[in-house]
Amino acid sequence: MGIFSKFKSAILSSLSFNKIDEELFEELEESLILSDVGMAVATEAVEELRKRVRKEKIETEEALKAALRDILEGYLNVGDPAIDVSTKPSVVLFIGVNGVGKTTSIGKIAHRMKSEGKKVILCAGDTFRAAAADQLEIWSQRAGVDTVRQNEGTDPGAVLFDALAAAKARSCDVVLCDTAGRLHNKQNLMNELAKMRKIIDREVPDSVCETLLVLDATTGQNGLIQAKEFKNAAALTGLILNKLDGTAKGGIIISISQGPRNTIVSTTEGLKADQKGLLVADELGNTSRPGIFASGDVVNGARTAVEAVAFSKKVAEAMDEYIQALPKE
Image 1 (cartoon, rainbow, N blue to C red):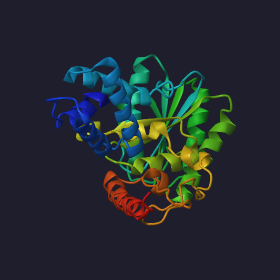
Image 2 (cartoon, helix red, strand yellow; image 1 turned 180 degrees about the vertical axis):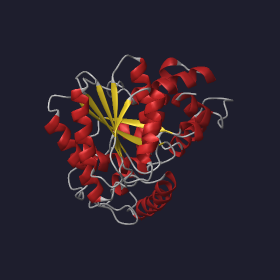
Image 3 (tube, one colour; image 1 turned 45 degrees about the vertical axis):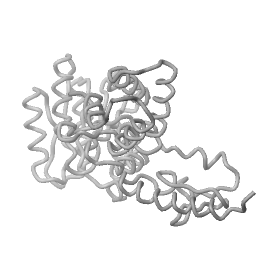
């Protein structure tokens, strides 16, 4: 089942299609948020759906599903989904936190590239996790490709250096490099990724280097933080979303594809922002401009849907109190 089939199943199954009305749109927006699409994107998508319903006079369930699918697909049209292997060798780094499926993804992609006639070599850059290189070797044997590895505890940069040298000597088309799982807030490990990228730039300066962030589909809005931090350290070029078979969610990939929705910060006079570009607001959503309230990702950054809704409820109550206190005309 594809990602959009899962979205449709999770989002639309609980909705009543007696008629297409405002209540249905509100239910749909809530379902999108709970599927980790993100509040800003969910609101925008539902508003676009409202317009299409009016313009195209949509009245049936199937037509509504088709319109929603088209809108969500549009958010993902942000570039070529294919891995660029136009140079020889091309290099693909697989990065991410622990347990998201980096090594398994490498095995699958190696098998596919081998079946397409590519000469592939695997780099066992995860020298931290016990038996990580052994696991990668099993995948390489299944795919029928070579692996470059060293002892546990070896500098990953040294393993990558050897893999690049082997790729050049053996005229390989692609180097798929595994890396140790790391948390995005561990700066020393993030610096290690930057070092590996420098080795690639030095040893194969004319080669294409893809850096793919592997995410767990159940991660939720925390995936936005991961994407931002990993991009700063390793110049991300793409995403792999794993474990969709274990969840009805996966909307985080849409949130990441859209980036932060904080243009209001730079286009509205008098609004203060912090170093991360987020709006400065107090616990009730009051911004630096009286009468202007803020909530959601633009204030707190990426958070879970539960946290976002809880904070937004407080802000809504504060807004109501502010309006009620305004002088009556």
